Amino acid sequence: MDGPIEEIQKSEITDKNEVHIHPIEHASMVLNWDGTIIYVDPVGGRDAYMKYDKPDLVLITHIHGDHLDLPTLESVVTGNTRIISPNSVYDRLPESLQKQVEILNNGDISKKLEITIEAFPMYNLGEEALQRHPKGKGNGYVLEKNNKRLYISGDTEDTPEMRNLKNIDIALVCMNLPYTMPVEKAAEAVLEFKPKKVYPYHYRGEGGLSDVANFKSIIEANNPEIEVVQLDWYPNN
Image (cartoon, rainbow, N blue to C red):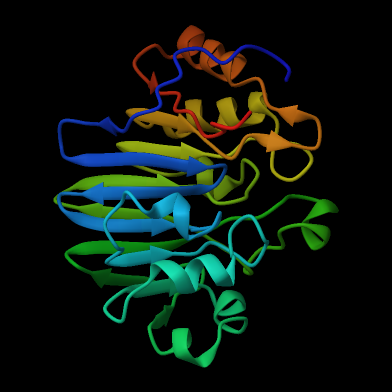
């Protein structure tokens, strides 16, 4: 690990507008938005989700194994669960799950359970794009309910689309090498789009855990109005 992680909080973080964020591990999380249960990229096996309510909605960003795990997905969904995914994910699902999927590709918008869902571009830049995350194959997501906006980056670099985000209340931003971006680039992007609150997540790479303490220091030094919240995404490390 490149540096210490400060202010780890293992329990949920609840903001005043009733969004509860429960980290599972790495890219997987459970959101409780005013009673609506949302699983994001559920992996890690059924037992990791036993203490949570079953999902009303599942968001899947892309096909990589730390985001899409069929045994876990099949074990946590119910017949009433709605699933949102890009076409690339849909093609890998069994027919039994495809029936529950609404395909959203970059730029598509849907409304489920009073939450507006926008499929947002997530991709690598330059030559790495074709090897890792080419544009158009995966989704980040922007969720909105009652004028509150939450951004989930998925696996991306600091793209122009990310830097041009507007009116984001909560952002979950990835930072790991060589798959997404270094903490410095993640911080630059966050300082551009200025969310009210940012959660570093998805920060394990080939070299171990990224220096999220440095990410926090950069944000606080340049815009102390942005609150950086660090959760424990790697409880077994």
